[in-house]
Image 1 (spheres, rainbow, N blue to C red):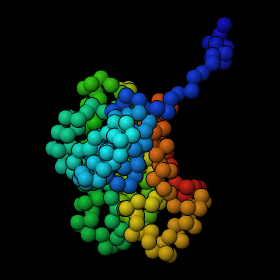
Image 2: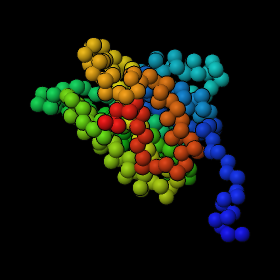
Image 3: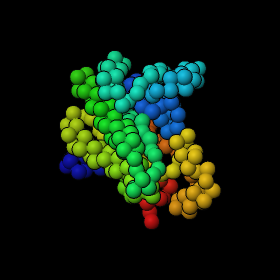
Image 4: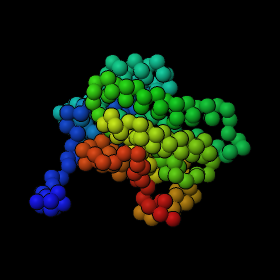
Length: 262
């Protein structure tokens, strides 16, 4: 029987969307999309480490997960402190999954961007993301394991945003970082992908979306007709982390309500 005929008659097994027994690290996990990602991975079977500066908020999440029989712990971490990042990840890893989520945005017109804004966004959205990913990957390689890195990009990693020049630049940088990491780390069994959310209802966007005109303009740009809720991102996180995405690397998964269709 030929190889073609053999593959056509073979009955394929659907890959699992579970991540049972895997160890996951989620940064920026005290609230918003990071917290949702941590909950999603714990519910899918991972032992999750939540990392952020807001320890009390994370401990409340951990208590909720533990009460449901799920595995989670919280560690206080400022991801802009390179020495602390490397120490904490070395002590708590190795991890098979990273959701590299910590980041922020400060909206300022290009001509009014301050040095403080520029330095803060570059340090958190680019440098810290690089350092966290590097530390996690070092742990994977030393342990001889593969895994999945999920970098949190944005629709602004693909298109510009008004009064978001630095943020847009930082997310384009993450898109490039993901492609370069995927190319270099593929032979080591490490997949690297981006998640690109649109406008989601989170503490980070609360002030922005409270403006009625802004909300109406935002809704008009989304064919799906609504702002994203954190639950809308949870399935995408689990998918990219799981064996179901085994052939996906260097990609950007748009969770954008159709924003980039027009």
